Amino acid sequence: MCSGRVDLDFVLRAFSKGADGVFVGGCWLGECHYVTEGNYDALSMMHLAKKVMEQIGVNPDRLRLEWISASEGMRYAEVMNDFGKKLKEMGPIGEGEGLEKSALKLKFQAVKKLLPFLKLVERERLRVKFKTEEEYSEFYNSPEVDGLIRELIGENLAISQITTLLARNPLSTREIAEVLKLAPTEVGRCLNISARQGLIRYDESQKRYAMA
Image (tube, rainbow, N blue to C red; front, side, top):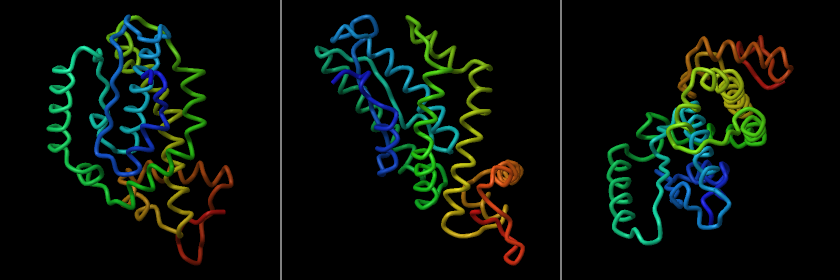
């Protein structure tokens, strides 16, 4: 299968089901086996996936993309051994990040709800075509893209996490911040936005936020 067929959903679903790491192997850039240059799409997808992982507190190094041709068996073995070693050093997913299993599951549920929006942002604002890995790295790590990620993706991910959590039971700002490992100020800002949008309400009797 062409590496360009590896959808963002595939990667995030693997992590949500408990995979400690995800490896994607593709043809070397400029040597696409299918002449579709799908490996460039895989490279762009990887950068976006890592940005999303950072936003929910999961180590982005758990996702690895490497270019390996069919004749490079030794290189494949070396890369996989190295990746396996680094994953052991990171520890099990969630545990290595200091996240409870329930909190980790909730975060990936929140991401899943936002997948259509994430793909829209990628198509409308992040879809580029470069020739080198360095250009993709420079683009995705630029101040402009970092700002876009924080403004559009980061805020919506935080709100999605909060509403997913509140769907279970009412909670205070402090309790939400503790479960999601988010700053109380960020939680408060997202709660205000969610309240204005009619998504949540403040329950005076419980002194906690709940779904509207």
